[in-house]
Structures are given as C-alpha cells and as structure tokens.
Length: 466
View (cartoon, rainbow, N blue to C red):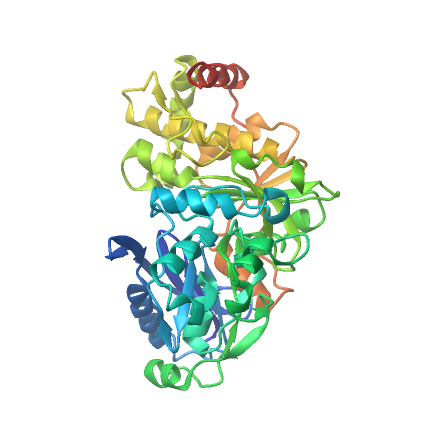
C-alpha cells in the first residue's frame, strides 16, 4: 500500500533534495540534484529553473501516494523578488562578491549587530546586501516587486501565495531584529519592510498546490503547503524530538557545506556579548525564539583539503584506517591551521593551510577531521555550549571528527543520531510535532589518545601566523 503523506522540498547550497515521508516518520523515497549556478549580466545566480525541473519530476513520481502536505526548506542566504507572476530577476548566489564601491556603501547603512544578531559576512551572505545590489541594478523594477526569502519562494512557486518567515529572515540577513521579532531598522529605512510578503509562521498552511501544478504532476488539488523554514533550523527542530535534547541546555551542530552550532540555552543570555567578528550570530527558531549560534564553512574546508568527494572522510569502510592514522598525526603535529574559507568562521582573517602535511592519504584525511574538530570546539566555546551536544548531518559519521570533538570537550555529552535526513525530518515535525526520531541517540566515545598537547600546539602555531 502506498503510504507517503508528506513531501519535503530541501534546497541546500550544494544539493537539492525532494523526499517523500510516511505518516509515522519513515522516508519512503527521495530524489536529488546537485545545484549549479548560472551567470546573468556577469553575476552568478541560483539555478531556479534547474531546481524547478527536479521538483516537478519528484512531485510527479510521488503522485501515486496519498500526499497531503508539502514543506519547503532552503538555505538561509537567498532572496527572491517577484514581479507579477514571475521572478523579477534570478536570485543571486550568496558567494558572488559585490562591487567594492557597493559593498562599502552597504556597510555604511547596515543596522548594528546588537539589533540584528547578524555579523558582517563576506559577499552576499547577509542577504540584505543582495537586496541592496538588486535595488541598484533594477531601480524601476525592485520598488514594484514582492520580496521573499528563498525557502518561501518555493512556497509561492507551489501555491501562488507569498509569505515571509522568521527562521529565514533571522539567518544573518541584516533585516530582522530577533529579540523584538520584527523587521530591522535597515529594512524599515530602505522601505523594504513594506515590499516583503506577509509574515507567516513556519508551521502555517499558506495554501494548496496550484491547480496547474496539480494537473502537471498528478498530485491532488487539495495538497496543503506550509510556509516552511531555514534548513539549519529544520535540523534544530528535528533534534528537539529527542528527550535528551529537549530537556537540557543543548547544542545542535549541523554539518554540511556549513557547520552551524545552535544552542538551546537553559538560561537567559545577553546576545549582545556574542563576538560579531568571529562569525557568531543570532538565529531564530521555528517558534520565533532567538538562538545563539556560531558557524564556519567546515564542509567546504574539508573538501578543499582532500580534493575529492567529501563523503570520503565519513565513508564507513575507511573509519578504522582513519582512526589508526590518528596517533602518527598527533605525534608529528601534522595539522591544518585556519582558515581555508577566508572571511568565515571564528578565525576569519587568518589564511591557513597545512603544517607538516602527511604523505599518507589516511593521515591527511584524519588531519582534516582533527582540524574540523578544533575549529568546531572553538565555535562552541564562543556561544557558551555546555552539557549536551548533538552532531548531525553528513559529517556525523566521520569518527575522527566526532570522537576528537568529544575528547576536546570532556565536560560535554556528545551524541550523534542514526538518522541521515535530519533537516527533512525537522520539516516533517512542523506537520506532526509529536513525531519522535527513529532510534536512539548514540553516545560518542572520545578518542583514546590525549590530544591536549596537539590542541596547544595548534593554538600556538595559529597565533604565530596570525
């Protein structure tokens, strides 16, 4: 019997995924597509057309199931502008650099970190910068357009109804005030507030699938579409399904292209004390609450180090070999210094690389994992993480990484989950909040080797090149 009742549309930076889920929280099927960028007028942009093709193909292939809901999810640094029934212009790729003079002009008008919780980030990672650039490029078009965060663009694509949602707006956009729960002074002064679609909660049903899409895909015309949310917040929402996370001061470290640590603090925290210059920020959770966070481009950095598919640091058959390589890596002080994605993370102004690069292939990969653990440990300290840590996402099965992190944080209980679809499952919990993740949390055993000396040497070497 066909049992898929909900579809999650997950548009990450690297990969677009459309998955079908049963009512009891089992993934039934999934289709994926690597994301590309396209260039228009010399500017790299998001490939909305390619994602549409995947989405239509996936929806059509799932149409023989009794689907009732669709939930869109996307990365947080995208902004779409609608003019009439179409995109005014293709959304910008957040890694596209602004022209220097525009970047300086935008920096002069940004709202303060104390208000927005948005640090100054490179290129278009503050999507207010993208909007500022669009307004300069298209002065006649943009004042007549409706603005949507990237996740909610797909809500509009599916329903014809636009909305704006807090987890997407609260993801270092410069345009949201997390404590007050509304638009920032920058958004108001630029008259952008009035151009955004109406505010909706992540769990709100915005509308039903458009009749023409229902006819094209074969889905029922009464399929409901939620407002949706930012992908890392979806992972956070999934983690809250575990009792160990929901009942403690806990941090979720979501790992993919970005490693994003989000703390569910059990105490009031002065968010203004977060160090803006070290890639700390304030996210907003699915309930509209501020969440102290820190991030770095861990997946991109590992990929830079190993030069091949990043799955190779967490592929199961290689784990014993990588763990066996650790003692020599530690003894030789073979280490990677930050930062490989310059401008990001807790050491944004450092330009790093290997010290004592090993010749052995396993040792190099083990060293990359140790590097990620050291940077993650630093980022977790910056947001006051304590008690409990859940590592989720595609690097949670990289044993050197998670076991090194557990060794670096002996006062913290470190878990991984045996789930591989945390973002999608978190989106599913918007529909069914009582769903609990399948399986139990797995307690991570620290590395058996003492890495305190290695950490001290890493810190000393880092300071020597700062």
